[in-house]
Every structure is written in C-alpha cells, then in structure tokens.
Amino acid sequence: MKIGTFFFKIWRWASIALVIGALVWTYSVFPEMVAVDFSDTGLAERYVNKEHVFYIVMGLFLVNNVIIAGLVKQIPKMDATQLPILKREEWAKHREELNEHLTNWLYCLMAVINTIIGFSLFALATINSTQYKMDVFDFAWVYYAGMALLVMVFLLPLRLLWPPVPQDRL
Image (cartoon, rainbow, N blue to C red; front, top):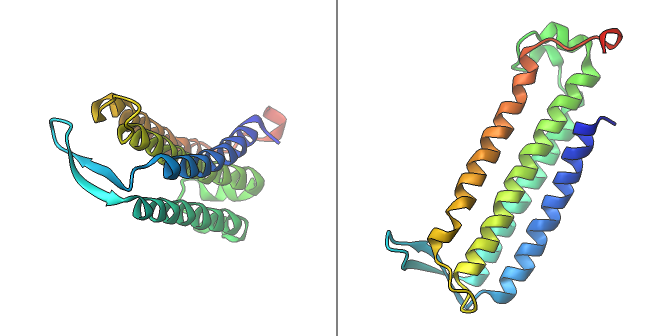
C-alpha cells in the first residue's frame, strides 16, 4: 500500500469518526432551537429545531458516504477507455494504478466533505452555546478552510493528465 492510499484511508475513517462524534456532542449541547442563519451584524435571524439539524446532517453524512463508497466499488468494473480522462489508452494499460488514483480521489472527496461537516457542527455548537462568548465571525476560518480543502481535492485529478510511470522507471 502506498503512503497516499494509507493517508486517504486513515483520513476517511478519522473524518467519519469526527462527524459521528460532532453529531452526538452537538446534539447534546444544542439548545432546543438552533440559530443557523445570521445577519451582517452577527445576530441570529433564523432558528431550526435541533432534531431537524440532526436529521439533515445525518442525511448529508449518509448520502455522502454511501454514494461515494458505491462509486469506489464500481471503479474496477468501469471500462478504462470510456473514462473521461486524457491518455485513456495508456491508463488502460496500467489499470491498477488508475484504480488507485481514482479510489484515492473519491476517498479524499468523502473525507473533505465529512471534515467540513464536522468542523461546521463544532462551530455551530460553539456559536449557539451560552458558555462561550463567540460570535459567528470568529468562525470565518471554517469557510476558508473548507474552500481550500475543496480546491485541493479538485486539483488531485490533475495527476491523470500525465501518463503513468512504468515500474522500471520508478
């Protein structure tokens, strides 16, 4: 197993644990009505019942993980010459490496989405907490970190623009 594959699998499982832990913890600390929309001044404008937040996040989590895991299982069954990548014929000759790149990319996408959901839940719980005196602007970094992670995950497939490296040249 390559180090990249190991890293993405560990990140995926850690992000799943993060979302489940964040969901359980935030559900226990949320007030009955959770502020989810804020004005430009930082005041809450829209409130949602904590059960609705729980079910929405659990639905996003399940859809994300089930659909992407289903795609990962279909990768070996797909015809490599029909994939929307450049140099299809060359990549078809190196099917194991292609499968590994695509699987890692999908696991990374899953981990990024889970990580963003987890950090967003922690931020929402802290904003709605009476124990901490933080406002919504203290968590602007979550947005920027999420955007940076999404940019990173969509740059990973750039590796498929170059042909695979033969084993004798490694």
